[in-house]
Amino acid sequence: MNVLDIKQPSDIKVLSIPELEKLAKDIRSFLVESIAQTGGHLSSNLGIVELTLAMHYVFQSPSDKFIYDVGHQSYIHKILTGRAKEFSKLRQYQGISGFQKRKESEHDSWEAGHSSTALSAALGFAVARDLNKEDYQVLPVVGDGSLASGMSFEALNEIGSEKRKMVIVFNDNEMSISKNVGAMSQTFTKLRSSKRYTGFKHGLQEFLSSNSAGQNVLEGLRDLKNNIKHTVVDASFFDDFGLDYIGPIDGHNLHELIRVFEVVKKHDGPIVVHVITQKGKGYLPAQLDDTGAWHGVGKFDVASGKMLSTKPIDHKDWSSIMSDGLLRLAKENEDIVALTPAMMAGSKLQGFYETYPERFFDCGIAEEHAVTFAAALAAAGKRPFISIYSSFLQRAYDQMNHDIARMNLPVVVSVDRAGLVGEDGETHHGLFDIAMFRNVPNLVLSQPKDAKEAHDLLYSAFLHQKPWLIRIPRGSVADNQDPFTAIEIGSWSKWQASDAVDAFILTYGPDVDNCIQKAKLEKLNIAVINARFFKPLDTAMLQQILTSSKPVVIYETDMKAGGLSSAVLEYANDYNIDANIVRLGIDDHFVCHGNTQVLRQVEHIDLDSCFMELKKVLTCD
Ligand SMILES: Cc1ncc(C[n+]2csc(CCOP(=O)(O)OP(=O)(O)O)c2C)c(N)n1
Ligand SMILES: CC(=O)[C@@H](O)[C@H](O)COP(=O)(O)O
Ligand SMILES: [Mg+2]
Picture 1 (cartoon, rainbow, N blue to C red):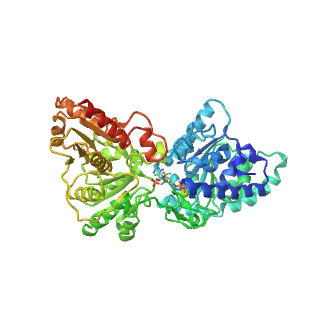
Picture 2: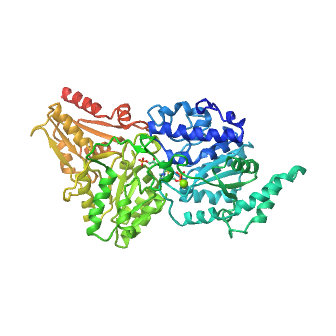
Picture 3: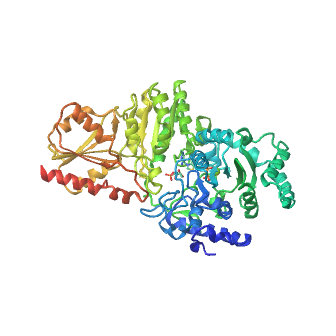
């Protein structure tokens, strides 16, 4: 069967095991070839080809609900539900999403992007099913990284007492993005090395062959389980939650997977199927990687396994700029410690970990815990630096407010992937943090325009005893290794074409220099203000600008509501200033996936849109 010909899951139900095995191989080749052209989440998908095939072989989508945690590993589900032809536009504007999407297919009953929501969602579907007196299976697929996160535990706690029918597929590949961490990962290792299923498997075989007399499969299964219980592992972690458990099962053995799913599908109550898979399976560079480099990739050359970087030669990722600066500071200040909630690779903190392993903490997918942990480190006299992606920081709003800001603790937060992130789309754009934190007392909220300013803000943050957030976008910037210079809290900077300009652009981040360049190129008599602090504002400069009687274009690429322009309007209102203000920013909707430049155009927040608005106000003046 050709991968591109699959229209619906029933197409594969007629295949024999050897045919399914051949299809698994073809799907892997398809994934590698296709993701090499578009970029995407490669390793996690290569790891669950057989698992997804077996699930769709046994269960009935869309009536049975396939719920992928995070959703980055749902590509095979997409292929088996008729979307293979759309992979050439995977994650591109108006193409299919890299996650499950309800609008995309009736087979996507749930969507995510952030981790550890699948078990709560599964309980919601299971309870609604029972209340509606319906009969379908609920199938959350949760990885070992996501299972060790707080939300998953909260859900397990309730699932164990509600006892609703569901098959929890625990996809254990010993990896989060990079190597999985924490005590839970050790518990999983213990389970993985147990012989529970091997013992169970022999019993199962006998049981199934002697079951023609019509003995209830599930009762038999339970007896069998009770018989082997406690034989190898004292008590599985899942038993303690009141959940039935089968495993560990070889996640690349289709025959075994199908047999187990056939048995558990009518099981009454929640049962965990523990499946061992290998991340990156079938494509050697990904299979051998334990750093996370092949978890999410851009375009690459299949034959050599070389990533095709579009970064200019003198550029570095913003995350690397921050971690370089941190390393320079940490050398002089032994109190500096670094934290990440499971994003060591993305936050470029490997160097810090290798240099100061005892001062580095990978907290796992646990943003809430990581922020409070950092707060207490600061309360005890350390100088924590924590890097969190803007959209994942949404998880830790309360801890930022209640633990860090309220106690005014000196934690430096690198708010990574701030602004539009591109292909990951809705769930990952970092568009809300300015609005989220602008109204929280004690916080300093800043964003550098370039690498030099990133280092200087970082240096300044460690000079003060205050909680200080530094936003940095996805992507790269020209490197800079100049000595540090302190920046005064709340100070903006200004470039002006002349002493008497005709208008102002108020902006932040890399758009500051983009605007200056364009103004120079077009010989416009304007000033560009680098509003590098959202909180506190440079009220002296703002007062001057707003009372100059010249138009002010506020150009931001985050949510308009609650952002910089909101702050300026509040100031103008409070001080009774009647200024000519034009605002660019994202209106009240979620932004879809696609290339960042394309999204900027679609949202009318690209540089040309900014200058079009500017020229309109200049000609009106
Ligand atoms: C709240 C949140 N924090 C961090 C991430 C980033 N993230 C995406 S996938 C992933 C690893 C998940 O590991 P696991 O569940 O084991 O899945 P695998 O990729 O190994 O299949 C992480 C940390 C996220 N999506 N959501
Ligand atoms: C699925 C997920 O949440 C991560 O894999 C994310 O896609 C990483 O983003 P970056 O590529 O920006 O590190
Ligand atoms: Mg994993």
